Image 1 (tube, rainbow, N blue to C red):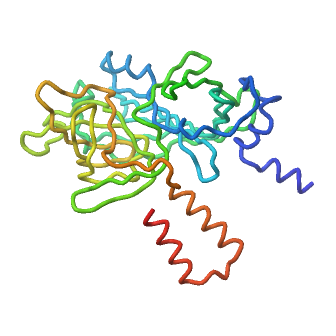
Image 2 (cartoon, one colour; image 1 turned 60 degrees about the horizontal axis):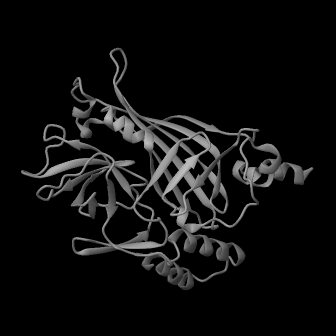
Image 3 (cartoon, helix red, strand yellow; image 1 turned 90 degrees about the horizontal axis):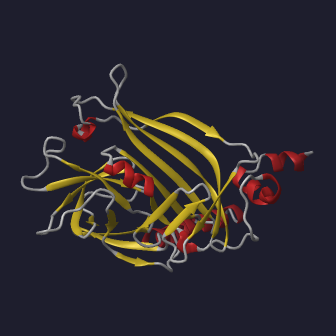
Length: 319
């Protein structure tokens, strides 16, 4: 009986991996193979370009990253700005997360958690939501969270192109990668300091900010970017927006304001990539992997000395 309870309490993605051949709607044509690290990256949907051309403030992205167990995880983000006559104006973000199984260039996505977050707008209400003051939004607050139980429709199949830059789902939905694979670690110079962190951050230009929306430095131009993660961003961090150099000016959850210095004849456009400027070591072990290893050692030997623990933490910090 205990074994049965243990199996039921396993994570949904793990159960999917074990049972996909019999239980999931979409399935791999071949046998599961070790994940290809280069799949990790930040992708934006082709539908987002259509929304941009329609002048809609809506964007859909797919963030794939490698965890400490050498597995691939994903977060599918959809952000939309909503304006109402009889309700509170807000931004809404929907997050679908889980793990994916690979068989060569075949992918099978298993969604385990769905979250919906809202942040209310309290500033001046204008007819065009693009003219809302970005500093007049509150924090994102969770309004819904649903954990999915294994069903026949748990898996969603896709294929990734030979160059690893395009993911096409079985329903025709397509995503294109922003920048290079997000693997290894990146070193970034910020003013007089140097930061080293897991290479998991990339973004796209959401829309351009007018001086009324974001009163920054005189004569400077600002854009709002939507990112895979903003955890490692800091003010004054150098980036490129398309081919235009810039720096991070202000950071929010999922979003950041970027100051740019447009060149003559060059100006970024919506959905242009926003990439960190720094050196990437794709072979370096991630900080998460180092932390996982340290936790494993502590569990095996709880009598590890304080001095040894400090040395191991310093190694992780300086990677």
